[in-house]
Image (cartoon, rainbow, N blue to C red; front, side, top):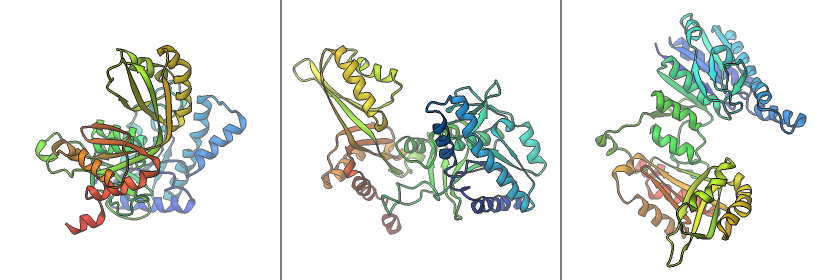
Length: 416
């Protein structure tokens, strides 16, 4: 007998028919003798509907009241799923995050889980019940309902699996696993059997939307076996495994596991900045004060003179505000400089733990892009990642070219 925590997203429970299908899937696990905790999101579109209702009442609702409102979406789903299980003869009890004992801090709309009380939950499981839990929410020490931010149901599932010592946390979604890249962009993308936590963290942070990054962090921190599966078809999915520090194991890892990409970034360049100590802080400090995250940074080597160029990227949604901060605060502080911006860029990234033990990945990447006449604007690297900034119009072409160059295409695998 195993203990499974199964999380179903909004698409998986998007209608009464789909909720019934989830109940059938859960029943099969219980009939096999396993204990099951089910975590569900709100039905697809419901959270957006609630947010729209709030906007019609108040353009700036308080975070506490927003949490009160949007947390109700999951409450509908848990009760309907429990009813569907009852209809199949499966004993089940539904709980909100507060009822099941998910304690969080008080950061409304983006709370973090601090601890989970599992005594009552374990008692229900030992009594043969399927426990159905509302994802995305908890309660602070003052009894206020809190939410974990969009995608927080993944985090709820992994946190419950960690607290209960579950054999596996299964994330059911509308895809059947983690792919080498987005199949909608590259039709030859293939499903990965396994991917390391470290690789999944990079893929999630670089644009892959299969898993919420906080859920992956939880899985890595508490060594929770995490599997991504399809709600709509059977299959092994993708298992996210713990990282390994064994050199002999890493030698056998594939060179590249996946290609992530995003067009949700913008590039800013401040020309003719003083090449003196502290200038980077004077540029980025006001941006950080505005709670704007900076991604890639490149500072050119100064020529003979005392001036250089400073380039960085931010989320496209922060582009206009960042431009304004540079123009109104940074340039006057530096005593001059010319600002240029570009919000028609894309970031394409190679991810793979195999990079640690193989040379030449960057040169192969650059050659593949050059063969397609794609110019590289910026480069950033880490132990297991290489990211490049290119023109947005070339993004999909770059992904397909790199996918083929590194042997990730289905046809390449089948030919081996």
